[in-house]
Image (cartoon, one colour):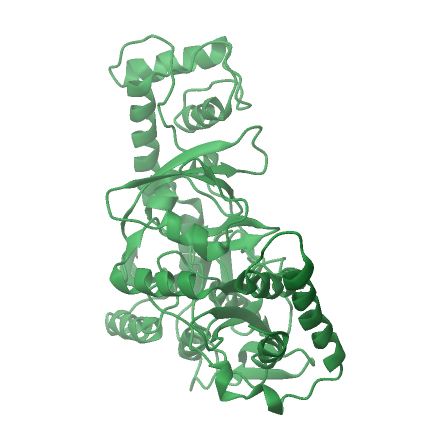
Length: 487
């Protein structure tokens, strides 16, 4: 490839962001089966693009020629061009704008189309490191204890350094029943965590419908796990089903929801946000804004309360902010993840693809939440054991040891009423006594050590406790808010 051809490619890269249509707001999800709409750069010829400084691009082409002709080692043109594109994207300092070469793009498409098997988490590239945005609710990733902002340092013992986001994704994905071991760096942890995750089928149903009976009142609940192509239709059907039952209030749960399609959350907003109020605003690079306004005929006759957590991202944040700012509804839980940009996947003409941030989205009131998140109106944290890393049972934990597994065990014991006296990861005598008390309650050998059997029993009981809705402080608080408004 000569320098003139490189120049045309670079011009095309500049051109692809112009006049594009956006449909996708979420970061890339590991098990997502839907892709953003694409725009082929060939549809907008490079010759038609007006550039203020064509000389700068010529300088890049000249650099390519010099390296090819004079550098001490042979370097392929493909590597240099890919490096130039990745270098431009790195300059953006945007974890959501990424490049896939032809091979990676093809593998990615095949992976998406062949199955829905994986670990169930959304990731992004943050400061050059593959980072968990959010594990899907009830997914293998969540059950294994992965948390938002966990940085993936190794995949099956191999460093992620130098991997692109999509290369890492393809290594993490795999056949149902197989295990991928992730080594992660977690804020607040003194050491790296090794977390094995058993891959599984990831449910494609994105809206769960249920009811809660409380003091003669019926509260409807719509749990949105992601914003896919048909999520708005499923939400509308679920809402109609609940309203036909004569519900007295509605809970909308987007905890653990990593986002998805912009038009999906816009359609949902039009079903619940009062008419005339904006659901979301989209802002381009020039600061021009487009407001998406609800056309709902009248305000719903029942109270609505939303539920969020730190794993709620992107489209989930749009909906949560609209409930608060446009609907004057309460949202219970934790501050959301803080992703306020809109991406589009764009074909570059040779099989490679670019996923580029094209717009910012702003809340109903025009607030930029990127890097900040949406604050709930009623902040409620779950019990500490909800956030503890799972026990692996890989080694027996005993007196005078100190590590993150012991810290998790202490948090779990405390949550179950067996007071260890501390939760800093040091195995002291009071921790040993708490372990003995737990072992006695479970009919286990009272050794005071956390062996594989004790770790397994403790982990399973904690899982059962987390799944028990009576322990879900956020849900119970939301129900109480509904009941105050209907009584």
